[in-house]
Image (cartoon, rainbow, N blue to C red; front, side):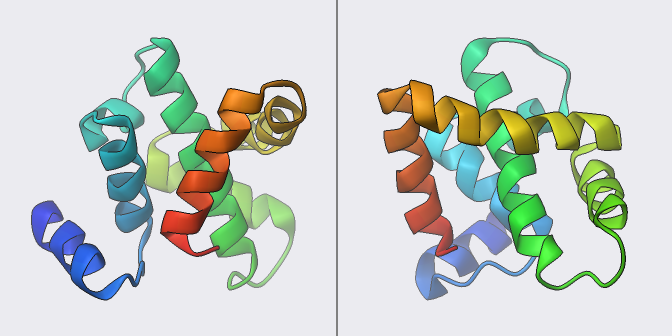
Length: 116
């Protein structure tokens, strides 16, 4: 089923759910979506997890009514993490974009793929 969503994304370019964001980022990093949802701390997996949290937050904050904390919780549910982990990613990603040019290039590539 997840491969069907990814095929839909490839053919239409439309991302509609959290799973699709996770699939697109996992494809970019050449890892399994389950690794993003897991607890591994390898750099590429942790980076993919942070970017998934960040982009899901950015996507959901536009469509989820209520306080920002509700968005943090919703993203946390999607990626199987606590809302504080999502908050940390929300702060970390912009800081890394300012200090790490290679990270910023990957961020911009993913942002273009997700059309955000």
